[in-house]
Amino acid sequence: QATVADDLEKILVTKEQIDERLAGMAARISADYEGRDLLLVGVLKGAVMVMADLVRALDRHVEMDWMAVSSYGSGTKSSGVVRILKDLDKDISGLHVLVVEDIIDSGLTLSWLLANLRSRGPASIEVAALLRKPDAAKVDVDVRYVGFEIPDEFVVGYGLDYAERYRNLPFVGTLAPHVYR
Ligand code: PRP
Ligand code: MN
Ligand code: MG
Image (cartoon, rainbow, N blue to C red; front, side, top):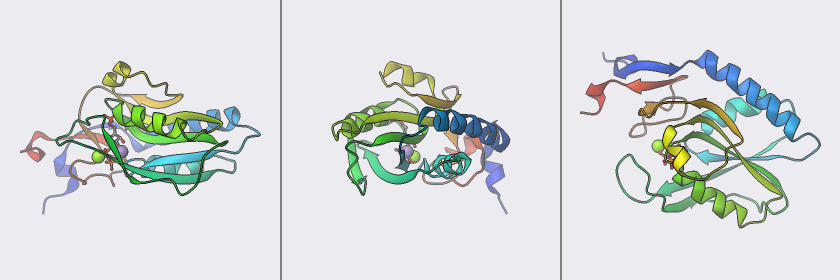
């Protein structure tokens, strides 16, 4: 019986590294937003794990809301043209918003999302992302909280999928070549 582990090439970020880094990010977020209400906006589906662990590392009140977006176009690269599949439940005008993402790859999803959310008049808007790839530098998005800068490899796990699989891995890794065939 083939296991999930058989599909992996290597582990890039371990569960322990993720936990430690999220604790550090949570401490910074707590300090930065002291005395202010905070709404975390998770981007489905990839951000589910980051959100779940980040909020449990935050020793303060937060609210959570979720958006689901889809890039038009096929393949593994996003096109930058985004469609809202599920919008926020509530109006964010006047609120301090922190967008939570698993990864910033081309940065196109986030760039579009930030423009969209800014048009709704939040008091502030910042981004926390667990992973960032080098290509994100090409897009002008200011990410306040970044977990790990990773090389330009296709990564899965901890929310990140390949064809909807591997999101449930507790770490971030790369897939063995045979998986893509
Ligand atoms: C992935 C990832 C980010 C986005 C990053 O989401 O979770 O949201 O792509 O790519 P970009 O920086 O090149 O725009 P995806 O669209 O695969 O949806 P998912 O979260 O449901 O997997
Ligand atoms: Mn995503
Ligand atoms: Mg995906």
